[in-house]
Length: 154
Length: 50
Image 1 (cartoon, rainbow over the protein chains, first blue to last red):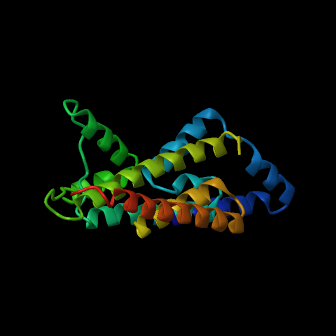
Image 2 (cartoon, each protein chain N blue to C red; image 1 turned 180 degrees about the horizontal axis):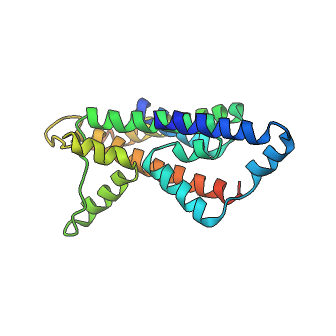
């Protein structure tokens, strides 16, 4: 929902600013952001999967990432995967927890509502874990892509 | 496996390319690779006991 709000707001703002000069729009879109704004965009991209691309005007990419990553995360929860917590005494669990945290706010929302407890004896437990971990890691890749876009490297 | 491969190849295809046709091609190639390698590994593990 928030992705659509950001997308619509940014489009309206662009239309208002660049109605008189379409070439100005192109030059603004391709110009790199300053580093502080780039970090903000990356933070938003981490918090909500796909929101960073929406902020930068890449609507189709942002929507695809939002839908796909959210679906992957949801399937992982439905398959009774576990959302790990960071335990320093167990390094592998800590790594899995870091990967899970890559998805952003959905991790905390799921934990708040009691999802992601995980049932070890379930036949789909490991599949669920795979979906949850990989969705987090893919969101990290998406954040890196947003960083490159924000700095004008792409 | 198919579902997992589909999601991963979709994300990678969209990340790696900007043109929609190129995104589809890249995603399809990655998907095919995932499925083929998965089937290959399944057969390689077939002789080993549970």
